[in-house]
Image (cartoon, rainbow, N blue to C red; front, side, top):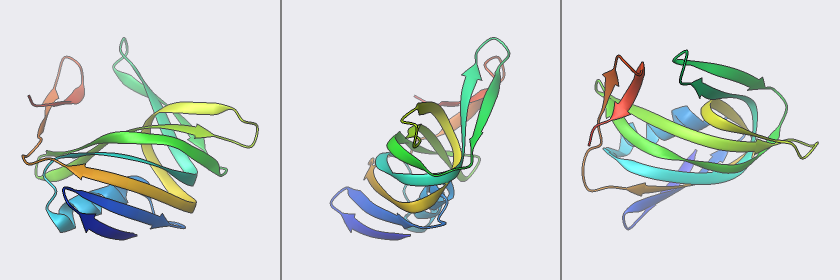
Length: 139
């Protein structure tokens, strides 16, 4: 992973085999990013996406092993129990031009991923909400 800091943001280039979510977490740790948003695109493999079933309160997951275009990636950087919490959603498209979308749990870079991180001037925190069985953003 390579990055450059700009005024209020970061530009990142992830390289082959970098993991997307852990790279964002590493950046937040190293640079002290307490809150932010991000977006990106590129090519990934070994991806895990999910759909949150609001009735069962569980994620249905789909593994996509082959390389896919990362058509769109967006999300937030916040903190939960002293650790960065990366909340990411993605749209991935394969060589059949079929798109898959949902919560991005993990993905390895197959060629490159370009990311833009916009930092906020304050800390974003999350808390576990037992009724929803998810980590919600504190407002």
